[in-house]
Length: 304
Image (cartoon, rainbow, N blue to C red):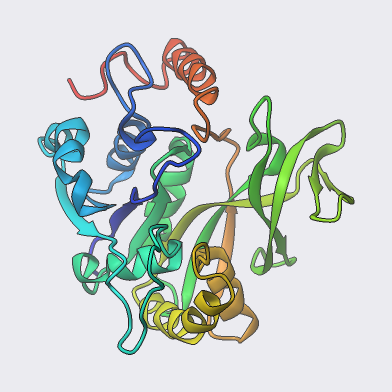
């Protein structure tokens, strides 16, 4: 069995943040959020990370983290660019927004090769337990079309203020994912969380509800399935919403589940998520990381 590799999706535009949040330091030692993910992955057993970025931030990314962590594990790069499209598909003039997380994973395919792999976002803190689950699954025997999603209780994934988008999961009695519904404008509430629909109606999301944070463990067979999904949807998606259409990984996985092509086991984690979507999130993230260091989860300097 080939050893798994970690893919970190870091090609987003950071439009709501105002700068490249992927490489913005979040503690006094100059670590960025990705440092903590790579550190947790490495101590869980991963020995290679693939940074999926845009070519125009390659130099900044090397300087911010790639060169530093390359002393401890193998570092590779993959690139998500708008011209990496199926034959016959053209983008509308003026399109700058990336084409979504399904497209991102497909862009990493040449770097991943034939290996199993984990996928995470660059701007999210997942906690050590998530990487332990991922590595254990990816190095164990399972069917070619078996995959893993690390699930978080919704109340552990919400910022103190503001609204977020989450993939709300339905999990059957055997622990397998049956559906994911993308809910937008989710905010904290006494019941756990509340999502606000486009028409202003609200949907209660009780405490303990499992949500996806784009923390996946994939067998290599997922590439063909995602490629088929992307080819089937991209032309119609761009025609309907040429400047903003994105092919989202949770939606693609859900479609494959409902078509009977894959099974996705959900492994719960008790760690709390935090991340940087807006500039106002950064002080909160810095405080939470400081508290984790005080508890001994991390040392002051990760890469001694």
